[in-house]
Length: 254
Image (cartoon, rainbow, N blue to C red; front, side):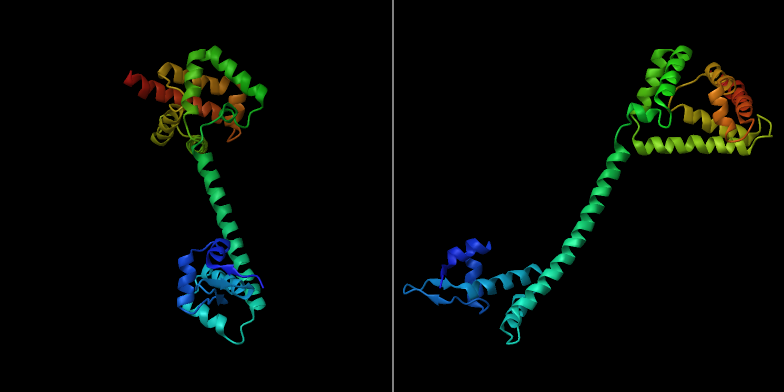
């Protein structure tokens, strides 16, 4: 029969010699024999019992309870190992779920704080159309103004970008709901003020530039189609309301 010293058992099981001495002292794990010099020796039965002890300890079962379980005449080591396996499988499944939750949270945080890419600046547009829009914007407003605008947006997180897109949509829907009112109506002008504040995230426009943008909403087929998709005639209504804001608010501030 193979016999192992306390140091060999400690190394195999990953526990300290002091722990094995303690188990011996409380009657939880007695050595199979001792040498003439009094050194502890452990055999196969003791190693199997130690495995059970360590498994129960992984499940946070108190040592006194472990001793009572192992010393019970009806104790079935195979049934105990099968029970340990079921318990550990449940813990593994729970830990996998926790890891998946952590991974999803990490990804969401990264997505919300990651800077926008060039493609995301023109999300939803075919590449050719995005390039044409950038080219036309450079011709209308100058390359430096377009670059400054894009740099502003690139500094936004994805969460901020999504909030900004939601605000633009909300303003447009609000304007569509107010169509039929006078351009100078207080509620209309309040929404135009939100539109101007929204625009400031991309580009600072004085009164003249804001009037130019209003005309573009009507004269550019794609801008017109975008706004009229909310409600037919919205492009003209936006133009009139924006002109009123430029004449009565922005011009007064200059």
